[in-house]
Length: 226
Image (cartoon, rainbow, N blue to C red; front, side):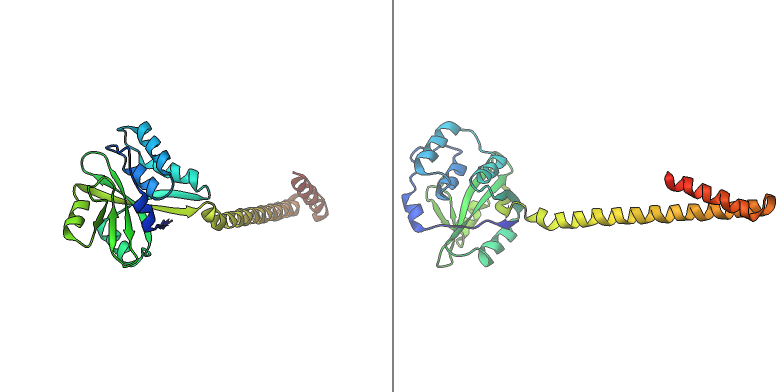
């Protein structure tokens, strides 16, 4: 899975209103900023949700509903790895969907945006100032208050794993069947040889060799028919 980066413009932020704010509407805010919900749908969602908390698996199902060709998952990430990704990998003009699990109380969702000038901004409409520059110590400390761990949204194309593994699985099954068939053939041949030797020994002791050959052929014919 790869971290999903969403392109975003300044216009998106300028149009954002959050006209019906709720205490736990952080996920709704993020979905609206990403264009998953329009302004009216977001406000209706806030009304329905009320003071309830949106769970991680519910967010993942929302993305799976909108982007049906992908598998979505929030992966745990520590603050150092998150900082390195934002600094070195996040493309300018893009945001990532992040969350944090707190030691106490519900988690929290927010976006992190790399501007075209390279500045990295936490976007959180629940704050008094929606934008917080993470290069400033006060902002960075505010993001890290009471944090147990961070999460970042990742996705992968559906079927990408099965396309790689399925042919190998088929090949493995064919190889197993081939080995089993060869093993049976070897076992049958060994049984025939053992019976032939045993019959020859018995024939040498009790009966003429010609008779033992007939008996051996009869035994082999019976075994082959089984």
